[in-house]
Amino acid sequence: MKKLLPFLFFVSFSMALFSQPVINASFNPAPGDNYKYHPVNTVITPGASGANVTWDFSTVQIIYNPITGKYMSPSATPYNNDFPGCNVAYEDFFVAGTYHYYETTASKMEKKGYASVLVVANYSDPQIMFTYPFTYNTVVSDSFKCSAPVGTMVLDKTGHWEAKGDAYGTLRLPSGNYSNVLRIRTTSYTLDDYGSSVGNYEVDAEEYLWVSTTTKVPLLRIAVEYHFANGSPVDTIEYIRVSDEVSGVGDPEGNITHLQLYPNPASGTVNLEFRLNRPSAVALTLLSADGKIIRTQSEADGSTGFMRREMDISLLPKGLYFLKFEADGVNRVFKVLKN
Image 1 (tube, rainbow, N blue to C red):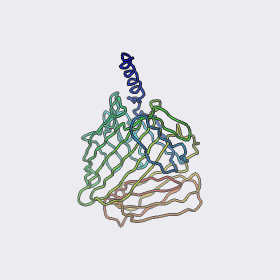
Image 2: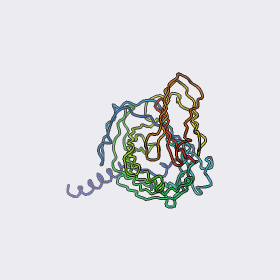
Image 3: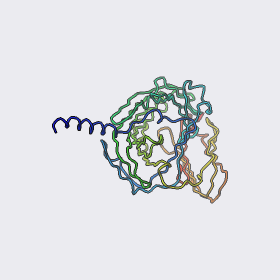
Image 4: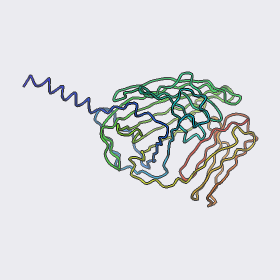
């Protein structure tokens, strides 16, 4: 019997290792990928870390209003020539007209920067997000930075990112149980410094991703972001999202489409155009660079179809502002440069 113990221990240990999920370069996004999520209308916490954990979220309420993240070839974006070597781009859902650029290989995923009509932020020190293989207790930690003109100002961006495989086990959702799931905890710190005339804007974020080896789209995401302007708290954003692949809910036609802002930069009036497929209240909020509310507009006239809303910024000082759009559960934030 004693002679068998080492062998049995080895078998048990090998099976434990084998049960740990491992993700590789197939996890990288590719042009044409659409990552669709549904929000959760139930408060839940990320739960425990460690090995062989069971996260029971089987009673959460998953609702409509799907959110889609679209990946594309950099050549299909307006700023392709500013990011040589990148092979995939992402169109930002929350900050309209912004594209993020990545270089993905068999060994890593690296962010090279982002661009919009306001700024082309090409990282002088890129952000390594994941290295492969990635599994339980894998840690990727990296800093990033850039300096870029924004109108008459200069943006100095610095930040730090960390991703850790902090747990694995079974994830229970209303649509079923998903075994051999890896949980990845990411933390990030980003500081945008616009100089003494505007100051700085900081975002501290923590997100948990439950990832299966059979799909590249995370099954579940729980995140919180803390926003600060010149060191003072501005906003806290929390969200819980379930992948459309495992949501078990239908996908109705989105209500808000063709959302765009022009002109930008602007000196007098900015226009927001969009299409409503069903009647909804529409609210606009203009904020200063430090997050203070300057002006609000809200109305619900029962109309549908293409619409335009105007926001007069002619009397405001030159600089950076934010215009927030809210309608039927959709929230979008536009950066506006007053010249």
